[in-house]
Length: 383
Image (cartoon, rainbow, N blue to C red; front, side, top):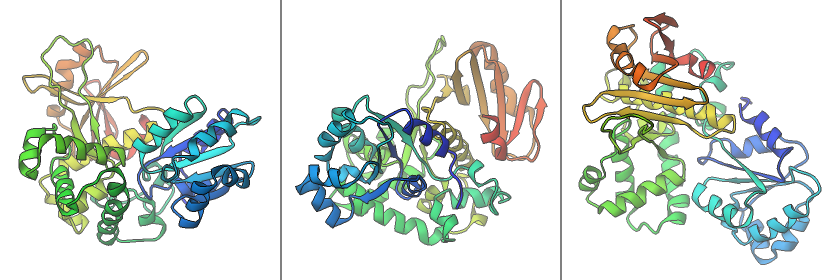
């Protein structure tokens, strides 16, 4: 079994808090990770028999669960949270309960209402490239990595992405979408997701998306919130620190998994990506997702932005850290180029940047005009 980078952080938080809840997309490995811990009984609230027991007799169900237990897809039985509060308030030891769920909005809503201050939160995404470094997939070509993505079943069970992702979307629509929103025409919703995939790595234009999907702007916002809450896509916000320029205010749209994007864009094999018109966008998406996975696996929030002013001067990625400011350009080219440094050079002093990088698909790590050119495989190690 492929080890998860989050395992150490999960253990640490279980020693510090009465409960930990782990959210993330369906089939990202939450259940598998939780089951590696000794001494916990596992209950899935998707199981009809267990759900009926929990709904009709929540106090009896929790009493029978034992001293330490895992509740999977706990958002299906929201009345449990009030009773969990009592258990956690009287707990003499930390780490009694692990809550798992694929619906961040519903789960966070219930936790903030009943369990605030008692629960630590983690987000588990599909495999990062660094988690695959000791496996047979470590030497995969870039296009293979982009096409396959990181969902564990693709690796643990050897499922071809061509078969995995269409079924994943179907399952997602049947379970999560119907639970979050009463969307009557799921065909239109699938088409909407595909339109979002065609805008990967681009500034979000609600009016354009509304027009192409033939739905109202408010419906676009609502459907985007569904996709965001269930960890299908996310937004990188524009950096708006102490910069005295007119700035773009709209976010950029990305997906958590490039394999899913490839499927939505009707890519059927990795070779198609070599000349695909959105390959650069997919590469940028991959890098951002790797950076976010690393932060989440350390139990930290994502702290990445992009910068673009009204004149179109742009930095792909800006990271603000205590005492540090990083500027990162993301280029799918395999060749070092002075052109990659143009925006970094012009904005280095504006940002008071302490570090700057170009992440590219070339094979070497090198310093070039005070900027570190970094191979995509090394992103997790450097950041």
